[in-house]
Image: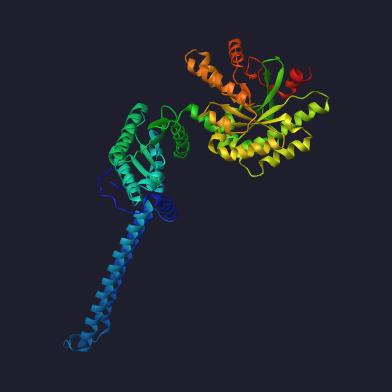
Amino acid sequence: MPGGYRSDADRADGDGAAEGNDRNFTARKIMDHINEKKIQGRLKKTAMIVAATGVILLAAAGFFGFFLLDPVEWADERTGTGGIAVYGLAVALFLLCLWMACSFALFRRDMGRLYQLAFYDRLTGAYHFSRFRQEAAVASEKSGNCTLVSLNIHQFKFINEIFGKEQGDRVLKAAADIISGALCVNEIFCRESADFFYLFLRETDRERVRQRLTAVMDRISRYGENTGCHILLYCGAVISDMEGERYSLEQMLTHVMFALAKAKETHQNNVWFFDSILHDKERLDHYVESHMYQALRDGEFALWLQVKRDLKTGKAAGAEALVRWEAGDGTSLRPDQFVPLFEQNGFCTKLDMYMVEKVCACIRGWLERGYVPLPVSVNQSKAALYQADYVRRVSDTAERYGVPSELLTLEILEGAALENAEEFDRTVCELREKGFQVSMDDFGSGYSSLNTLGSLHIDEVKLDRGFLREVSSGANERMCLVTEQIISLCKKLHIRTVVEGVETAEDDRMIRGWGCEAGQGYYYGKPVCAEEFTKQYIEK
């Protein structure tokens, strides 16, 4: 059977792994003009033309010999004029037929090469994605029961860089051979790009599919171990079942990528199946990405505020700005439903500056009404922080609204500081020179160190709620000691400390015992819209 199917046929060597995308692009261009039936049709048509031409020439020779030449000349000796003409014509016809036969053979060979280029990956012998897509579409239409699988080798480019391109090619060939050997009748696979494979399976039982795919990944990983390189694979799968969810091939191609993305979060050989939960997330992500720009223009991102409580006085010490997406159709989205996607697609930089402006407008309103304003902190993404004009834009916004810079605190996640501490601190210093406060959010959620506190010129540390949860459970006394020491060090460095996630009286008692300066959480007040916050904490 052909290369994409289960087969023991030899696979031709070819270009390296890094050229996979280029070859697939070439194949797709060729596929726009030809397909298998067209190739076969052209071969048949050419053969018929050659045969018809030969018959016509032979008929012409016969007509010439029997009707145009004089019988006497025809009967003459071999040296006669008629005999020479006939034999000369016969030789000419023979050479012409030989030329046409050779031309046909060359044409057939070239069409065969074109066929291989269009439909097969030269390195692994697997189908190109274009051919795979054709075959899978037809098969899925005939029988609704099938499974589409996406298989990706984690950070394959480093295998090429560390072990060399030839070793990378060997890994891809071995992976293709292992996949091919695991396929059943009428199951196909393709190499879509350098390190990415699609499989089309007839099996629809989830556990059976999981077992088969796990076995494939384990064999590929063992091959890597035997050759000295660690191979980690991610696998996503979507099942189309007549008795359950029925999907078209195009839908499956979309769904399987969501499953693969989920599998990549596990950092281990794992199979992740597309299901209703992922389907809902896919629909939500699509809604978010297709509406986010219009939502920003229409002002659908609303400012909410949550109070920070001063633990000494019991009064409101400030607030954290939170965002809620209140769509025009009445839909309300929580931050965790859209912020992670914004961080992936870069839209967070626009939302960050939008929220800075909303906070400045809110504080300006308090000042104009004669109220004593509270300082407000605004979460800022890593992408926004490293923009060249970030400090200028924040400063210009505050000046435009006439808001004193000390009333605005920029909260920046710990991860942004740890990634590039020197550049981070440079931006922090620029913000502080303008009078703004800088807070490190979620301290302790990553790989924080005491060196971080000593090297960065920050004004505030917000301890991750994970500290509180772990200590309050009583399971880790050492963590309690660590937390107390962090707070003590912050005091010596004149860095304010705020603990997030305070939900009970016991939590409040605990953080007071640590010597924390402020707390934030549902115990002190839940997030409310800006208008309600003004009534509860500003007007009083």
